[in-house]
Length: 88
Image (tube, rainbow, N blue to C red; front, side, top):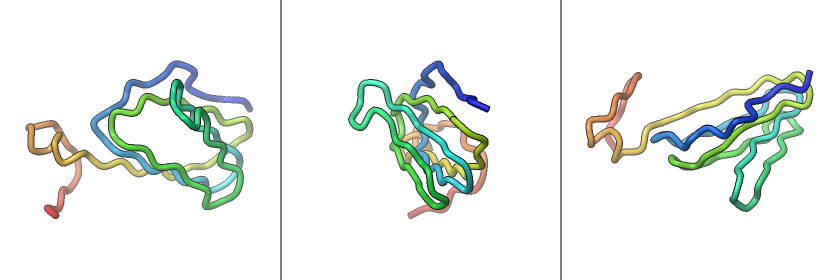
């Protein structure tokens, strides 16, 4: 099943870490180098900072673990955050 989000998501005020658990997965970063990161082995990962527009595609069935955390500026500016924030 070739699935994906073909429209580019605007960059959110969160940094993201996506880890491949199984299958194949591609994260696309239009207008950036590299323009696409292919995850093909369990444990492959991609990390991007807040504000980076992206989309994704799964050429095969895939399971991913994605962790997102707010940028300190978003928290201090009164941005809505769900979860627990531990000060540095």
